[in-house]
Length: 502
Image (tube, rainbow, N blue to C red):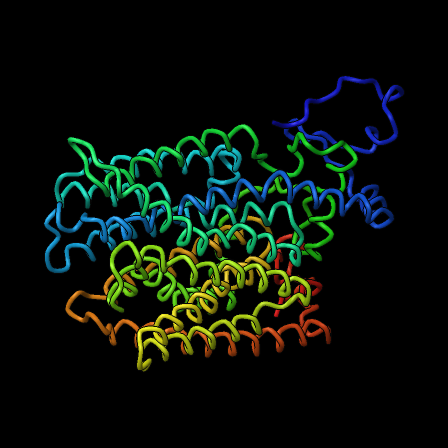
């Protein structure tokens, strides 16, 4: 997908071509020339951004929509007879949910390193094809052991996707353009709950001689996933310098603007030139943002996973039939869909993440209080709207916040991988928050999730205070001594000119 080298003599080259280097088969503008062009032509920059929005974001939206559908459709299948047919007594269903996250967690970090090495345009669609095949196989399962095996391999295939998409977008968009684009694909998570519920309602009515109802949820949704993954491989570029939908001039701007936005965190003009080093790995591990925002994501993802997996069950205990409960999952998830977009848009507009997380956590807490204390089914159902509107925006916000505050690429890849790895350990809590023995009120589950959101509030405040202090020290020149430590190109986000995003 890269641009082929032109074999021209210097005297026959255009001025634009003469000012470029050729790196790995891609033209890379020499820094000084391009920076001048970039600063003088914001129209080209906006055109580049629009093209990225058109040619990249829709594919990532589709990937994440299908990922969440395939991950959580077991909740829909449960209402349509899966637990009865497979004799999932006691906590067997919860164990089947949990085993998904064991390989998912193990592959998060190395999978992020593979994004650039393999090529994101092949790696991300390859993951979706693999898990789509596994998802289809769940429909053929006839035993508890078979369900455990397929759920394990589903987690293995899905593990590298979310972190891979975050660092992939960070290759193309400046730091304060990133949040809205993360929101544009992540809003597919609540939408999957709405779309998946409607789709499952229809598919569960299919009845054949050998399979009845719930297997067709996996057959059809898995097949759609495989086809979409294959299609995506033909359109998703690896890096900005390897795009085929940009002109040469636009490619120059796309590459150079990322270096300008790094504010000293990298000396490389193209992410394709960056090389792996354990120095970057250590830097990611030793950053306070990584620690605090990984803990914060852990707190956020607990209610997100339990909400996605158990919402049909929670609604059914309010007195609704299985079909009605499936349909009633749609409105709360649509509320989450719109609040993700709204929060992401305004977060980029004001270039802040933490304050929006505070609002989201408070909304989620209100929702769980309504679920715990609501006197009627209508009040409790209303609480699900507050939960969805609060928790779903927090997930892209916390990931985008860390991605903004780590640089360059391999530091960001490591930190994001570590954040998602640690956060997904919350799945071992989330999958056991709503036990059948606690039905119909599920007081324990609601209380755990509310407590996690209070923990998120506390961590967000601590991180905001730390960033204000650190940015103040850099502004006053108290970190300038780092420039004398050695190679300034190895400072990454520790560079005195780099400012953390609040």
